[in-house]
Image (cartoon, rainbow, N blue to C red):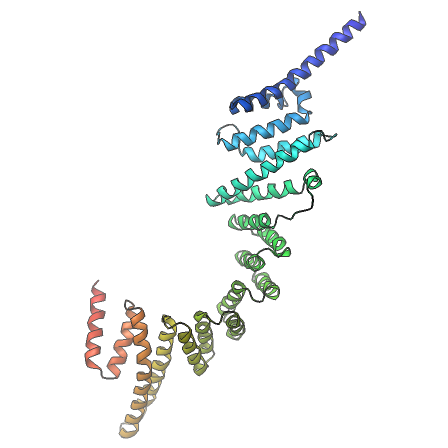
Length: 393
């Protein structure tokens, strides 16, 4: 009788075990028939820790693998209201399956599951990023990398592959999510593998800037420049940094390096001219502006800057002339003629600037003043009328 009781107990126990594992089979059947909501509802019973009958299914690796597969379908079919972030939950389920699969019976199928999950995560990351959900995108990329680093995935790979693009994209998503420290870590790692190196250091620089760490930001730029001395982005950022700090000499050094790399970029010559002007080296500035015009005759700024240099020289001479005693008429007239010569030098440059931008009142005012000083009455009246018309608009 005792033996019969024992047998009955075992039968009842086995029935309970198979009943719960049967839930897993049922859930899988619902999934394959397309009833994903019912599949989800059924698998959740099998993993419900408050369900006393779920003890055996909770420790069965196949339970968690099936749950991961169902959750991926929930995501693909965009079924709302069942669970938040089903892909993330799917990954947690697969990890639990790996932990429970001590004899590696599911290793091959789990590798396939995880490979498909990486594809889903990658696509979801792109969608999230494009929709401005940067933290979600960051998490997708992080889970992607975590999957790659799982022993089960490394063992199945013929050779280790570093997901440099994923690392870089994780940094980009973290940067956009304002997780600057994290973004710096990812960009440093991507740069270590020489992936978009110059761009990585530029983002590291920007992240430090946004964190208010000026020293770290400039050091990162310099470090990047040492590794990628021909990278235009880094050179431009170094130039802008030194310009913003009023350190013209250092800015010029980097502008000259940039010109060597990009001799056909007129903006570099114009930038160098501006720095030379700040240092009082006007003749050198004039040569730079003229070089900028040679490279691209349609650039507005070098024409305007040249006109201003010559015009200001004329004004300086006029101011000095006004200090001459009224009795020294000839000397005064000679100085005024010198001033007019500077205004004449300024005129073709300001006229060219005007031909490139005829809507800027500041340009018209400059033209008007030069026409007045050179006694070009007709042109003065013409420009004055244009200014009045623009002011009425």
